[in-house]
Length: 427
Image (tube, rainbow, N blue to C red; front, side, top):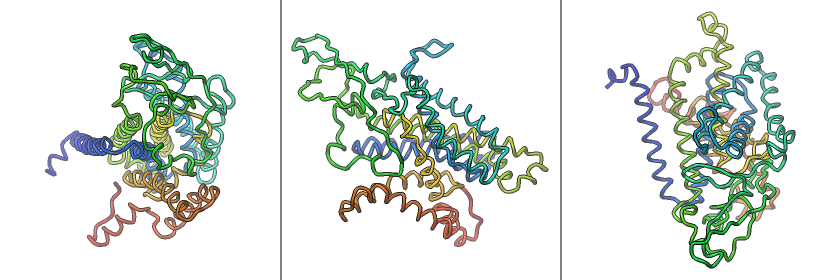
C-alpha cells in the first residue's frame, strides 16, 4: 500500500477519493435534515471555504490578515453583478447561469489577491495588519460610490436560484398560475416591486444573522422559496398551477446547502494538494525563516503573493456562496465583523490545519445559537444577547492563545503526540 502511494499522481487520486467520500456522506446528511439544519450546514460550509484560505495565509505562510471578509465581498459582488446583468458568456456566447458567475467570482478573487499580495509582500507585522484592516473597512464601502451598479448602501437583491441556474432582479420575478385568473391554462404575471434590503448585518458575530428556531423559520414558505427576501404578501394566491417554474419538492435551503458543500469540497481538494505538496513546503519554509528560504533558492515575495492569491480565491468563492445563501449582497453583509470572525474561527480551530477550519466554521455557527438558548432561559435583554457572542469569542481567543496556541486541532495533535511519542502533524 505504501508503494502505491508513492506512484506519480497517487496522492492526487487519494485526495480526490477522500474528498468525494466526505462529499457523499455530508450530502446524505443534508438530504435527511430539515430546512433550518440545511441553512446551518450551508453556513458552516461557507465559513470553512473561506477559512481554508485563512489556514494557508495565516497558518502556513505566516501572514497577518484582517481583511478576508473584504475578499469575500469581491466574490459576492462579482457574482451578483454578473448574474443580474449578463445573459451570455463573453467570447463563448453560451447562455449565462449561476455557475459561470461562480467562475468569474473566483477569477476576480485571484486578480484582487495578486494585487494585494504584491503590496503585502513588501510589508510585515503591524504594517501588514494595517493594510488588511484597511481592506476590511474600505472595500465594502466602495458599493456606496457606485450605487447604480453595486446598489449602494441598500445592496443588490437576488431571486432564489433554481437547479438549472439563472438569476434575475427581484422586480422581474414572474409566477405562472392559472388559478389567479380563474381560467385553466392562462398565464398571469405578478410583478414584485423592488424593496429595500432587509438583510443588512452590521456584524457577522451578532445574533441577527441567524434564524429563530420557531416553526415559521424552519418551514420553507412561498416567500422564502420563490422571491427570496422581498416582503410581498402572497396570501390567498393559489400556486398549484405554476408548472415547471415552482417545484414542490424543491427546497431552497437544501439546494443552497448542497451548493455550499460542493464548493467547500472543491476548495478542500485544492487546499489539500497545495498544503501537502511542494507549494506547502515553500510556504512553511518562508514562514519559519525567510532568510534561510531565500538562501535555498525560494523567493519569499513570490511565496507571499501566491498565499494571498489562493486565500483570496477561496474567500471569493465563499462570498459567492454567501450571496446565494442570503439572496442579497451589500456592504453590511461583508463588514469588519466578518473578517474578524474568520480570524477567530481559524485561531480557535487551529490555524495550521484544514480540519481546524471546519471546526472553526462549526464554532462560528454553533456559538450564537448556544448564546441564544442561554438568553431565552435567562431572560436577557436583546442588547446583551447580541453582544454576548463577541465577548465569548474574545475570551476564547485569549484562552486559546495563552493555553493552546495550536487551537483545538493543535492541542489534540499535541496530546496524541505525547501519548504515542511521535511528532504532531498538520491536517
